[in-house]
Length: 510
Length: 101
Image (cartoon, rainbow over all chains, first blue to last red; front, side):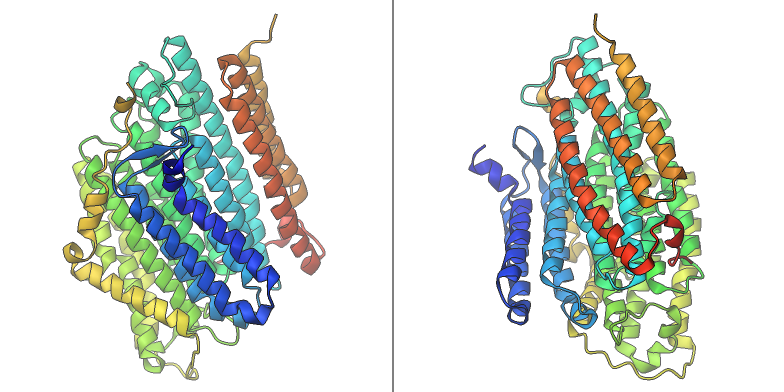
């Protein structure tokens, strides 16, 4: 271990240290005095973490006995995760006040969950990935049930916890089977373990897949890989493991729901992307392809039909997150083809970033319109909103259009990118089914828009005081439009540059 | 004469399946959680068996991580369940039915 290693792992270390510092500061000082200072301290650590990631640059470097690897994609995702954490802390300061919830623990939990997510995105060894996912999940269980006095939040926490722990066990069994199958195959074929790598390292797995004939189709490995992929998909809220997601998003306070929806997706899909780069071009039979196509299409259909006719807007966003998970999985599917891989990785990265912005913004609107310490959850509360609060109605309208993939919003470009990658990978019928799913989703989103603008209501003027949520919602809506209208000028080039760093392959260890 | 690797793996798979059966059929969250612990220990058994057979310390190392993480999960999980018990006087998963739609 040396300074370079610590620097490479600096972003999650800073977040974890930040979590402890924020917690202890809160403990040591009087409650009323720490409100502003604690927020300031937490934001400071988020920014330090972003700077640390940024200084790593785009080149590939490994650290801690090849346990972690950092390249452009990881840096992008870590900066995104730190930004999500900072925005959530800012956006929820007022809502926590009105719910009478403790703030010190809340900030610490957000920082610790982000630290876990960052460990997950940079891990090259499955052991690290497991530890990262658990740091993230345990903080998530507490956050989902954070509003203790409210039955819905409690229930969300308990459901999330029981399902999450169950899925963690399946993830572990998958890792154990991969560990055993890789070890046995290398031993049987007289292959040496690459110097400085362990059997659970993705590089070692890649070597086994590409150099041991028939390994990719061996039942032990396939069972392990399917368990690993399936449980990571659960963490990202993809059908049919989605049952918990709408419940959790409805039960948790709005800013927390936004945090859970985005951080889990960013982290789980980034590590899946890395796992899929070693499966690309490998002979794994049809099993993994069939599983991935099935998960993607099921999520798109279930998510979009579930979103239609919802009475709760947070639940609608929950189902929407399931559907968007499906589109991201379609991108991952395209990354399994060797030719479409680069385009698919760019598309998926862009999709994840855009989804994060849109979702954080949508939940911020829900918090913004809340009153009397309650989120504006019922869709009937949005009836005639265009007349009462035009700004909020337009902001929410932009997010809904982006989620449904209407041109001039970023949601259109991201969907387009995924579909283009999918078509070049030869998945025409898959793309057609996914488009049908999008059409169903369009109904769900447009229904809310028509409630807002074309239905009159006798409801009273909502005068909200939540300035922080308003700020977050409006800036996110601006970003959605700017990224949608000027994609090349806004953010696309930096994504293309950041993913040109070579994916970790089996070649470099020979 | 040592016990072959297959025996350990089959035993571990049987224990893991029993754990899954417990999670899906039990109503009490504490019993569900015990079944999850059974699944984790099944994984530990297979990890140690693989590690021993391969002459690699990685399996045992991961086992220690699993035990530490399981302990952390228990503490958080029991906290959540106790919070529910305070408001509902009953922790069966049947009463967790407020969220639907």
